[in-house]
Length: 224
Image (tube, rainbow, N blue to C red; front, side):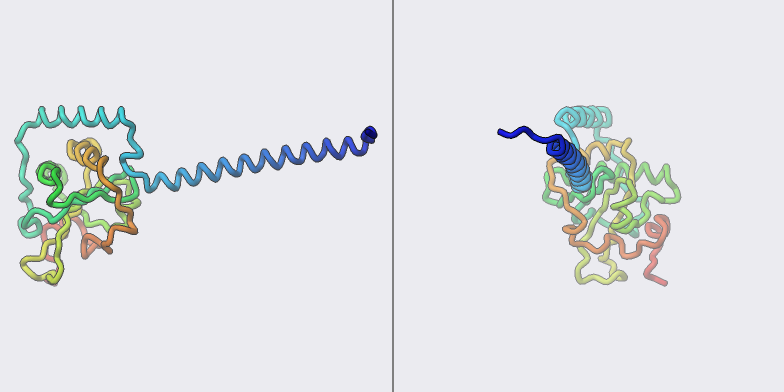
C-alpha cells in the first residue's frame, strides 16, 4: 500500500476538521430546535404535565387542611343580583400556568363544591376590591396573555336577547394564586383535559370587553 503524501495527509486532516465542525454545528442546531419545540409545547401542557406527583400530593394535603380549618362557613355571592341571577351552566378555569381552559359542567361531581368556594372568594374579593377590578370582563385573548387566573361562570343564552330577563351575563372573575380557590381548582383540574383556545368553541365570554368591572357588574350597558 502506497504511503500518503503530505498533501494527501493535509487533505484528510482538513476533511476531518471540517466534518467535526459540521457535526458540532448540527448538534447545536438540533439542541436549540428541541428546546424551542419543548418551550412551544409547554404552552399547551396541561396542569397534570406541569406538576410532579410530590407537588400534587402536597397540594392535596394543603387543600385538606384548608377544608378542615374553614369548615362549612361559605359565603354566598349576592353583591349584584342584576348580574348574578342563578348558578352558572358551567364553570371554566383559566390558569396562568397553562395556555388553555378547564371546564366543570353541572353534572361534574366537583361542580357544587367548586361553585361554593368560588362564590366565597368572590364575596371577599368584592370587600377587598370595591372598584370591582377583579370582575373586569377581559377578552379571551387578554386572558391568554395576562398571566392572571380566571374563574368564568358561563351561561347558555341561546335564543335570548341581551334585554331578555332570562339572559345571564357570563361572570369573569380574576383571582390570586394565594387563595383556597386557586389551590382547589388547580387540584381538580389536574384530572381534566385541557381545552385549547382553538377548541374552546366560544368567540368571547362577555359581550362587552371594553368596560370596567364595576360597570359590567352594576349597570345595564344594553339600556343605552
